[in-house]
Amino acid sequence: MHDISQYQDFFIEYLKKQDIRKEPKNLYEPIEYILGLGGKRMRPVLTLMAAEVFDTDYKEALPAAMAVEVFHNFSLVHDDIMDDAPLRRGQVTVHEKWNLNTGILSGDTMLILAYQYFEKYEPGVFRDLAKLFSKTALEVCEGQQLDVDFEKRNDVSIQEYLKMIEYKTAVLVAAAMKMGAIVAKTSEKESDAIYDFGLNLGLAFQLQDDYLDAFGDPETFGKQVGGDIIENKKTYLYLKAVEFSSQEKASELQQLFSIELEDNFEKIETAKTIFNESGASKATQEAIEMYTFKAFETLEKMNINAVKKNILRTFGENLMGRKV
Image (cartoon, rainbow, N blue to C red; front, side):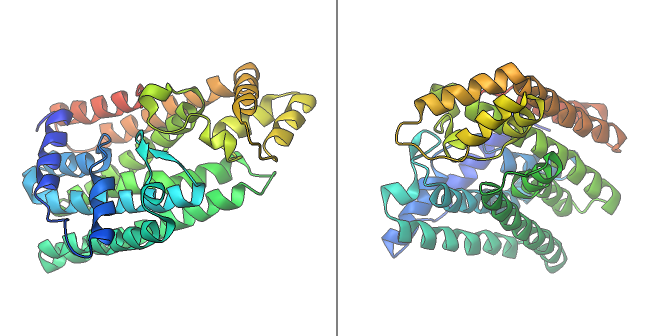
C-alpha cells in the first residue's frame, strides 16, 4: 500500500487526464472549475485505499474513485445554491461565478457523468457499484432535505441530527470505501465491515466540520466561518448548547437562531460564546473522538494485516485532528 499523499497524487494525475472540456463551454467549464478547486480528495482516496487493503492495485479503482469525486462535487454545487454560499474551498462558488441556472444544470450533468465511470467495469462489478451508488445518492438527497427541514424546526433531537448527517455526509464516505472493496471483489463480510468503518469515520468528519464551521481559522477552513450560525442550522453544537444551557441562555440561543441579520458578526460571536460556556464545544469534540474510535473498533475486527490497519487508522487520526 501507499501513503495518503501518494493516493492523492495518483488520483489528481488521473483527474487531470479526464476530458472535461467539451461543448457547450458554459455547461462543462463550471464542472472543470469545481473539480479543480482542490480539497483533500478524501473520498476518492478512500476508494483507492480500500482496493489495496483487499490486495487489488489502486489503478483498478480509479474510475470508481472518479465517480465518487464527481458525485461529491455535484452535491457541493447544489448545496452551495441552496445555502446561498459565496465561497467553496476559499474560492467563489459556481452559482456566484456563473449564475444560478448554470449551477443547477452543470450539477445535474455531473450526476450523469459520475454514473458513466462505472461503465468501465465488467457487468457484475458495474451492477454492484451502481446499486450501492444509487442507494447512497438517494440517502444523500434525503439527508440534504432533512437538513433544510431542520432549519425551520425548534424540536430537532440529537438522534434526528445524527441520522441527517449520516445520510448527508457519512454514507458517501462509507460507500467510497465499499466501492474499493467491490472493485477488489472481496467478501461481503469484509465489504460490509469497511462500509461500517467509513460510516463512523464520516460521522466524525461531519461533526468536525460542524465544529470548524464555528471555530475554524478562516485562512485554512476554506468556507465562510460561522456559515451554519448565519443559516440558523441546528448543528450538534447548537443542540448540545440548548441541552446544557440554562433556560434563559437556551431561549437566547433559540431566538438568535430564528432571525436573519444584515450584519452577522455579533450573532456569530454570541453563539460561539454560548457554545463554549455551555460545554457544547467540548461535547462535540468528545463525539468526534467517540465516532473515530468506533471506526477503529470495526477496523480491528477486519481480516487484514497490521500494516494496512495502521494506514487506515492513521487516516482516521489525521481526520480527527484536521484544521480544514
